[in-house]
Length: 224
Length: 224
DNA sequence: TCAAAAGTGTTAAGTTTACACCCATGA
DNA sequence: TCATGGGTGTAAACTTAACACTTTTGA
Image 1 (cartoon, each protein chain N blue to C red):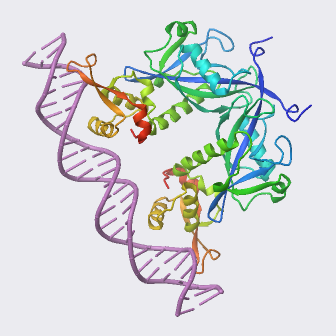
Image 2 (tube, rainbow over the protein chains, first blue to last red):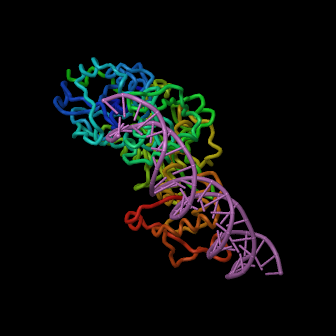
Image 3 (cartoon, chains in turn brown, blue, yellow, red):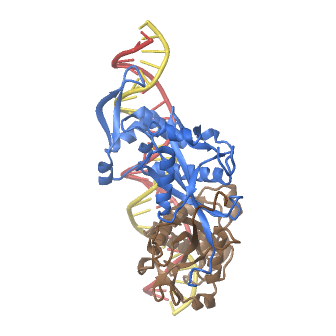
């Protein structure tokens, strides 16, 4: 009997709010559960923390199990610890959000998990407190995206300024002025114009840009 | 054997970063541990989540055990889940910060716990990852204080504008211009001038103000 | 009478917003 | 040739920052 033994232990889960961007819209990767508990209902992807992994590692693992992706931008949203948040057992859950490039995940795994991209504006009722998690993640991501260059994680390596603007319009859920937007981008030297041209999005073609993380760290001033 | 049983369980702790304001300085209530583990070292106040309480309730309980206070402003900072963050046992800890009026706590309890107010600029090395928790709490509190009227929790119900300014100077760790500060305060109708005068802080006497939460909720525009 | 904190407005600088047209190209 | 998205500058409105002196009173 030592100091810790007198206290109870708990299942600890991680739940993953996975953001993607496509067709000018933010979507979440949600599971239509074909497994217990709560089979048939919608949820976000989750899993239990194991003995041999940190909470952050558990979140990475869970994301990897669904998407096949590694080295993904993730941020912890918080712990959800209400007694009956999971009606099956007492489970304390740590919510994380992830930003992934929607062109770049393992479709087979996603299919196996019966997961689907759902527009952020059309999120269905989710199990447990998952809607609350999603809402909190959305707010956090939005706040973070305005002061840190995390939005690029949702885009291909090369992107047009129209894509970037439409991404930020989706994040903020408001229209932005094209000229003002481009003026601000032009001030950030770490958003670099390449000599490549995108011919998909328009007849005329649009310059492709890239985010240079090293340049950002030299002068980390970001505001969009 | 059900769905959950195959997964491990963990001790879950809550740790409480307790902010106070006195003599123009922010301080934290820290424990010089006279108990195991890590006896003799400094830590923040913590405790284990119990079966019959939510994580948030556990944080409130732990704060109450040290200060005797209830209905205190608290916010969760995040979960700390590294495998060996507590070298004694695997413990996942949820950090919370609390803002209390430093004139208004149970001195006997604090003495019993061997706790002391330590200036935020002179935080000693703390056990485990507690310095990291403190740093994260400090940043979160600072960010929150600039957009939500939470600073008032650190002041008496009645306060002078000089006190309020000096509080925000301590929170931001930078000097503020007196006239600009008062101009901004004047725009917020929920910071109400009372007809009472403080005679302690100056010979001339200064008007005492109060925060009106109901008025704030009617028009919740805050920026200091 | 003087030291110490309270109180009070104006101007310049900087930032943000609003706004409209020409360009290049493929269909 | 025309419809579509790409690309560009300026002026007004607003916000923020800088700044100095008078008042009151207890010691």
